Amino acid sequence: MATQPSPAFTLEEYLDLERAANYRSEFCAGVIYPMAGDTEVHSRLAMRIGVLMTVKLQDRCRVYGSDLNVYLEKQDLCVYPDAMVICGEPQFWRRRKDVIVNPTLIVEVLSPSTEAYDKSIKSTYYRGLASLQYCILAAQDRVFIEHSTRQANGDWTVRQHEERGSVLELGGLGISIAAEEIYRSILI
Image 1: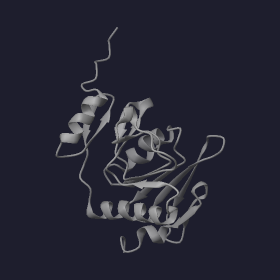
Image 2: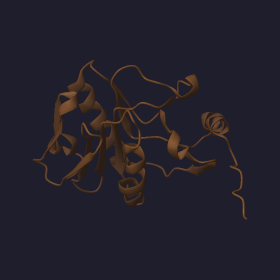
Image 3: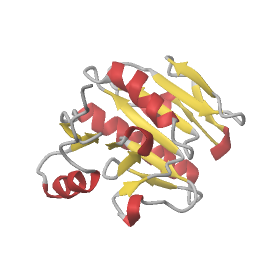
Image 4: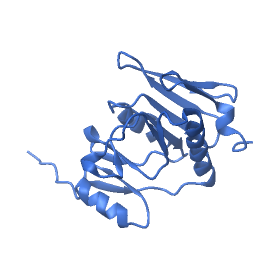
């Protein structure tokens, strides 16, 4: 019977390497994958969504940019979402202040090269987080937002917004955001 090779790196080793690295990478079950660089539009879109969340949520929840990892224990996966919201106190993996385990909302800006992975596998992994209530995927090359919401029974509903006039309703957070607000002056 063949045996599985042992992982090349532990999560702790990855995190130590990541803090000293000149580039970002993500961790999956012992393997480190370099991340592609962001485009100007990608950066603006992630920042816009983060700012809108900050303004609308006021001080009810904390909004973070892409500098913190999220650890998904079931998949042994450590990733950088483009933005996230935490309602309540942040919980850290093994008390490391750079690895979150309890996001309430995650935002991923879709790149042409990662869109299929982000929309299928990565968003499914995110929805496995017990704390997560919302997952927002926003395309950077067109008006397209996929908005997943956890229902009271644990099931997820997924809505797609492809018009500037559509509105993301985040009822559990008490806010709504129009696609026009997100894409204003980013896409012509």
